[in-house]
Image (cartoon, helix red, strand yellow):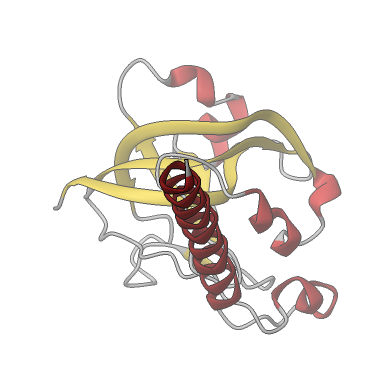
Length: 178
């Protein structure tokens, strides 16, 4: 009887220890600012969205595939426009069959691409956006222009500009490097 209690107790301690280790690791990653969610969305990123009221959510977590194209028209090596709020304004030319993620403003004003915005990546020059990025920078590796990727984030309508975008974006996985 005592052996059963011993092994049961050992199992409980092991399970609790394992859970504590997972929670401790999640706290370390959260403090580092690293994006931990691959294939899913990180809800903590919303805290760093400048003026979130302008974004109307279509889908809380969407995944799309496509080719990264140059939104800066040759101005920036990473292919993203560097916005005053510290975010990137980047383009993803979606693979066939995903046209429903675009609207008429994406077609007319965003070169027919879905916008995705890595946040707090660049110097913030817009005064009212500084708090969203204070002591934080999204650690999201941007693949090179021309790479075929899978991107995951919150699919929203930017009501100020009228186009659809992934904002915040949680992950970008390279499917085929340029």
